[in-house]
Amino acid sequence: MIAIVAAALAAAAIVTPHLLRLDRAPAGIASAIWLSALLLRALAALATAVAVEVFVPTTGLLEPLSDWCLRAEGTILSGHGAIDVVLALPALVLAGSLAIVIAGLYRASRRVQALLRDAVIGEGPAGSLVVADGALLVAVAGLRRPRVVVSAGALLALDDAELLAALDHERGHIALRHRYVLVAGELARAVARFLPGTAAAARELLFSLERDADRYALDRRHDPAVLASAICKSATQAAPPALALGGGVVARRARLLLEGAAPGAHLGLIALAPVMVALVIASAIALPFAAHAGYHESHRGRVQCTL
Amino acid sequence: MAALWRLGAGTVEQVREELPSRYQGAYTTVQTLLNRLTERGLLERTREGRGYVYRPKLTEAEYLSGSIRRTLAGASNSARQAALANIIGGLRPDELTELEELAREAREARRP
Image (tube, rainbow over all chains, first blue to last red; front, top):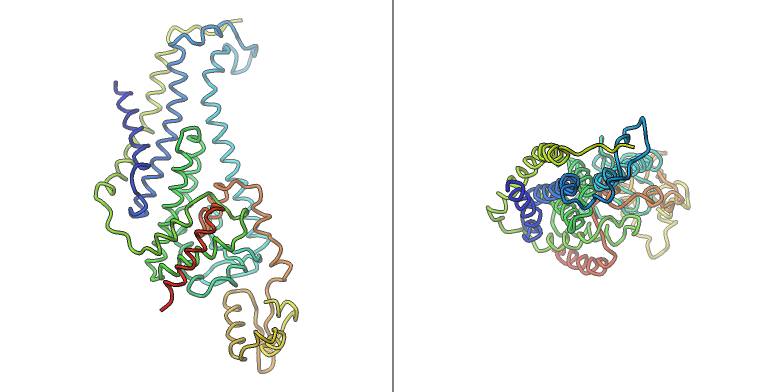
C-alpha cells in the first residue's frame, strides 16, 4: 500500500511540471522544479529496474528458464542462471546508458579544453578569452574552472551593448553554477531516457537555466531588447549544425524578453519547488531500503542454479 | 580586419587607404573602429613615431578555420551544452525564420 501511494506521488510530481505554465515563473524556481522532475524520473527508472528484479520472479513468467545455468565456474556469475541474466537486463541497460553519457561528457569536456589550448589568441573584453574563429560564439567553457569565451566572429558581429549583455549572460551561468545543474540533469536524463517526456523535461531545464542567466544579465541594467537582439544575432549567424545545441528554446526566450517583465509568480508555484526537492531526497533515501527489503523477500527460498 | 589582413600591419591612414572607397570614412572614424577592435582583443597596437601601428592578432586563415566546429564535431548536443554553455542554448532549424522576425522586433524596440 505504501509503495502504491509513493509511486502515485512520484508520478504526480513527474507529470505536474508539464501541466503548469512555468515560462513566467521565476527562472530559479522553474530550474529547481525541472531538475527535481528529471531526478525523480531517474529514480523512477531505477525503481522500475528494481521492481522487475523483485516482482517478476513471483509471477512465474520466467519458470521455463529455470533449468538454464551459466557455465562460469570461479567467476561472479557462478551459481547464476538465465533467469538472473534476464532480471539484471533493465539495470544493465540503465548502467550502459549512464556510462555512454558520462563518456560523452568527458569527451566533450576534453574537446573544449583542446579548443581553449589551441584556438585562444588572448584576453578579450571583460576578462573573456578570444577564440580565433569567424563563427559567432559567446559561451562558458569548462566545468572545473569555467571561463567566458568569445569568438572573433562574435566580436565583429555584436555591437558594444549586445556584446556586454551577452558576456553578462554567460557570467550569470558561472555565478549561478549552472554547469553543475546541467551535468546533474544530463546524468538524470541518461538514466530516465526510456520514460516518455524525459527529453521535454531536459529541454525545459535548459530553457529555465538560460532564462536564469538572462535575468542575471538584466539585473545588471541591460536592456531586454538588446539581449534579445544579441540572442537572435547569435542564433541566426552561428554556424548550425555545429552550434545547433538541443532544440526549441531560443525563440521562446527572445519573445519573453521582448514581451517585458513577467507578472509575480503564484505562491503555489513557488511552494512546488521545495516540495519537489523534498520528494527527490525522500525517494533517494527510501529506494535503497525498499530495494533491499524487496530483494530479500523475493529471493527467500529461491535455490541457486546448480550444474 | 580584411584591410589589415591584406596589409599585415598598418597605421590608421594606411588602413583607411586600403578600404574600398565607399567605406573610406573620416580618419577619426577609422581610428575609433581600430581602437575598439584593439579593446576587444582582435588587434594589438604598438607606438611607432607619432602614431600607432595596428596588427591583427589572428590570421584570415584562423578566422576562416572553423576550429570551433571541427573541435566540437562528434560531441553529442547535450554533452556539448554542458561543456560549452552558450547564449544560444538550443536552436531548431525551423526556429530561424521566427528568429529573424524577432530580431526585427528587437531592432525596433531598441530604436529611441
